[in-house]
Image (cartoon, rainbow, N blue to C red):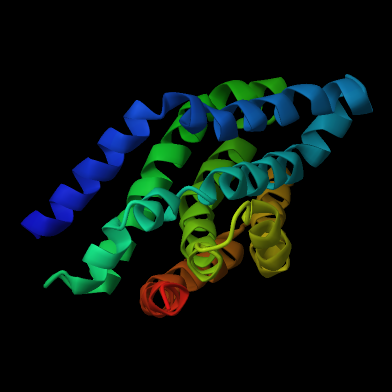
Length: 221
C-alpha cells in the first residue's frame, strides 16, 4: 500500500507541475457550457430541458481530451517499463493511476457544478441527480477510457483515435445519466438509472484494471 500511495503522490505532483495541460479539459468544459445557451437562446424552459445532456456530453469530451496523457509520460521516459517489473502488481498501479486521474480532473468539475447548474436553470432535484450521476458515471469513463489509452500509448497524437474508439461505448452511460436527470426534473424516481450506473461502475472496477495491464504489456512489444 505504501508503494501505491507513492504512485498516487507522484501523479498528483506531476499534474501540478503541468498546470497548463491540466487546465485544458476544465476550460473546454466551461466553454461548452457557457457557449451553448448563447446558441439555443435564453429560454429557461429549453435550457432546463437540455441541461443534463449538455453537461454530460461536455464532461465526456473534456475527460477524453485529458486522457491521452494518462500513460504518455510514463511510456516516453521508461517508467512504464519499470512498472511492469515492479513487485507491486501492475493492475494495482494502473488502478491507482486511473483513480488519481479521475480525482484530479473530476473534482474541479464537481466544485463548479453549482454555478453550471444555475447557469442552465437546473432546479435542486435535477442538481442532486446530476451530482449522483457524475459521481457514479465519470469513474466508468476513466476506467474504460484508460483501456483505449493503453492500447494506443505507443502512437503519436492518438487522442482523436481514442475518442473515436471510445465514444460509442459511453452511449449507454449517457442514456442512463440523462434519463435520471430528466426523471428528477419531473419529480419521478430515478433509482433504477442510478442502479444501472452503479452496476456499470462495479463491472468496470472489476474488469478494467486487468484489461489495462494487458494492453500496456502488449503496447510495449
